[in-house]
Length: 90
Length: 243
Image 1 (cartoon, rainbow over the protein chains, first blue to last red):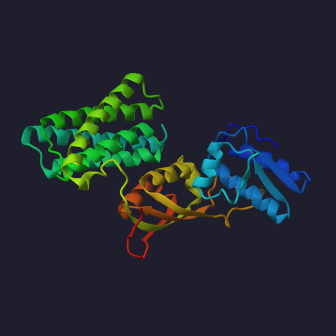
Image 2: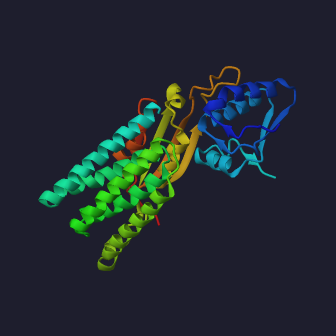
Image 3: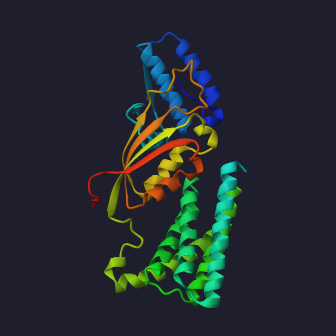
C-alpha cells in the first residue's frame, strides 16, 4: 500500500492511525507499506509505525516497509529504528 | 509563535543584549576576562538553542564566532578595537538571522552575503594563531579527545506536544559529538487499537562520545526538560581518545 502523504508527523498522526487501522482490518498475513511519497517523518510517526508493527506481530502477521526516501532512512537511522523497521529499497 | 519559539527569541535577544553591553563596555574601558566571557557565552548559548530548532544559518555562524571568542579567551587573539567593531557587526548579524528564523522567513541574499563576508574575516583572524602555535590548529576542527557519556532519555507522555522533534535534538547531538550507539526501547508502545498517537511512549539509551561537560548535554534538553526524564553518566572507564 502506498502511503500518499508527503509528511508523516504529529500534524496528521490521527489520519495516519485511521489509515493503519483500515490496513490491519484486511485479512492479509503481511502488510507492505510503500513510503516512496514520504519526504519527511518525525518521531511521533515513527512511533506509530512501531505500534503498527507490534500489533501485526501479536497477530503473527508481518509488516514490510519499502521504498523509503533518503530523508526517511536518515530519520530511522538517527533514532536507532533502522533495524526494527527495516526498509527494503528496490 | 509557539511557546518554544517565543522562548528561543527571548533567550537569544537577551544574550545579544548582554553581548552588546559587554562590547560597548570593552570599548570604553578596555577588554577584560569578564567581557570576553560574556561575549563567548552569548555566541555559545545561541548556538546551543538554535540547534534545538535546526536553525542551520545561526548554528553555522555562531559556531565560527564562538571559535573566534575561544581564541580570544585563550589569549591567542587580542580583543582590540578592530575586533570589537567586527564583533558588533556579528552581533547585529546574528540578531537579523534570529529575526528571520523566528518569522520562518528565508534569509535574503544580502544577509547571506554579509554572512559570508563576516565568516571570511573571522576565518582570517583564526588563521593568525595557526601559524604561531600548533596547539590551536584545531580551532575549526572537532576535538579529538572525547568523553564517553551514557544517556538515558525517557520521553514523558506530553513530549510530542512540546512541538520539539526528538530527531532535531539527536541531529544537534551529532553536531556536538558522535552518537556511538542509540537503542530505542519500544516495549511501552501500545498496540494500534489502544495507542493515543499524540502521547510519547518511547525511551532511548545512547552512548555519546563528545568533549563536552555534562551541563552542555543537559542544555540540549533545556526546552523539553519538563517532558523528559534524563539520566546522564560518565562512562567509568578513563576518558578515551578517539582518532
